[in-house]
Image (cartoon, rainbow, N blue to C red; front, side):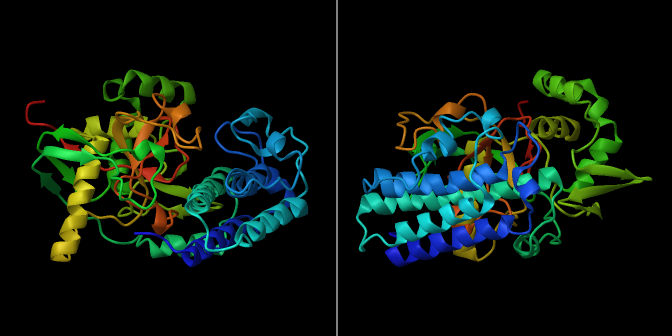
Length: 395
């Protein structure tokens, strides 16, 4: 499969329209936002998106000079530490939006047909922007800002009210090729390359853990039961004084949850989101279950794709409700070689945990069984939940 230049043009424009729509309702103060370790100032992040596209597609691929002499000093995320991004002399809102617009037009004005090097870096820039668009939504949720209409539309389209599918799907195990193959049209370096792993037979839940199921864990004192938590998880729980999910609020005997700037009743059938890996681990011990490894998750997803193609019916529920934590540390695959964007994966190996799947914020062009998302296990802010596996019989 080879995406045409026309498709790439549409993708680039679509990603930019989405970026602008996400921040359009915000005032200048909200575009800056409070200083937090988990999110960026949105004004800086907008400039970073434009800088990334300009740097790779125009400077690296085409040898053209940047539009601003201070671009690298302001927006290069590899060189500008997170903590100082609030202290930079950032251009105004109007100038930042103009930078986004002019960069896209310069990119799309390049003579076509594009060579493969240009196509590669344009795909990279589009997917990078897609990932930052999801980060923008995380920031809106973190700060309790209103959700723009496109997020409400995307949430409704993700089938949030679909009933969860009960039970497990069994997988026979055996040899499995984990990772992407060389015929994939685009993959990130951490997906390279497919290599054989051996899996024991396993049984994985058809649906992610729901809010009702997680509420039962909370009501049963799960946050106070030391035996359910790993050492790292218990240290996190104690340090943060956490006693329930981050965006849940008591309402008498019931729970409300905050979605952007609104408090809504907890929907029992909806998949759990905004749970971190420590909470997922503790829930699994309480439920006498476990998290899947990333190889198990991918093997089940590949089998599910085949079942959908051959039988017209998926075994598992992929409603894009949220990313799903796995039990696997984020590690390089055998023979890992860094891609031109050197800091996409390599700095985060060994400290982050792998998530798989997608969320309702993820464009379809990024969704594939081999895609590896990754966060530190203490992060509650991503739109992430989890599904469980039956314990191994020998355990």
